[in-house]
Length: 292
Image 1 (spheres, one colour):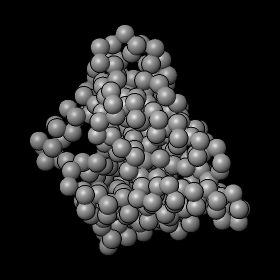
Image 2 (image 1 turned 90 degrees about the horizontal axis):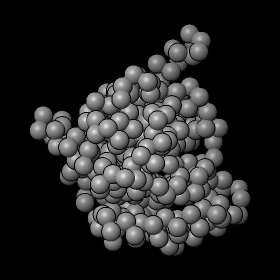
Image 3 (image 1 turned 180 degrees about the vertical axis):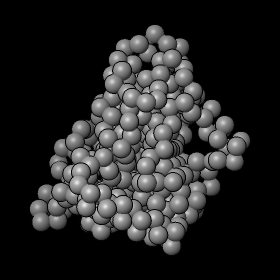
């Protein structure tokens, strides 16, 4: 990366930092734990997880991202090195305290990440024989949050990014959370994906976590020029009027290229339509949480 590029990025972070101080977001009554999930891949799940987390942190809120996807794309977007601390594999398999994995995200005073390491791909096989294997993350997260609260360092949001599949990693994420954020790509098959997710969530509610619910739905990769995108958006508005945050995230180059610079779009191009959309979504999430 060139010197001029670094200068512009640093300047962008400074501008955003000033904006954050001028426009603080409301603090939730208690720590809100979100799992970002969709059983269909390629819907903007990780992109939404990291950009919502970054936007909340810019609003002055204390946020932890847990990367539970073995691909580690959330770590890439946040610029987190997956090799310098234990990761979520050690938390799930070796009972390593979550606190030992936490890394600060550069440029964000209030954003942290618990990284996915490459070994996480094999965790599901090893966990099959564990007692209460579906609740390992829940227990580890509750212990971590309790310790932080005792030190007067309560987190406002925990955002868990999980794989686009229904395995033990995703089940752990849904068991640990109270809210589910569902990104829906504005294409036909995404509606089928949310039907499968709701069916799975019903099973989780009955057997493992009666409190978890879909609280937030986002429209991703929206192209207002196409009839299909508008039809899908209308269907979502009709079926999920309370859950939907009706700020469509546009299909935009800046959003997709930001991770190649180890950044979210919030710092890569804060004036882009994608960054503006995610900031609006984060503010709506915060406002809903403060009134809960």
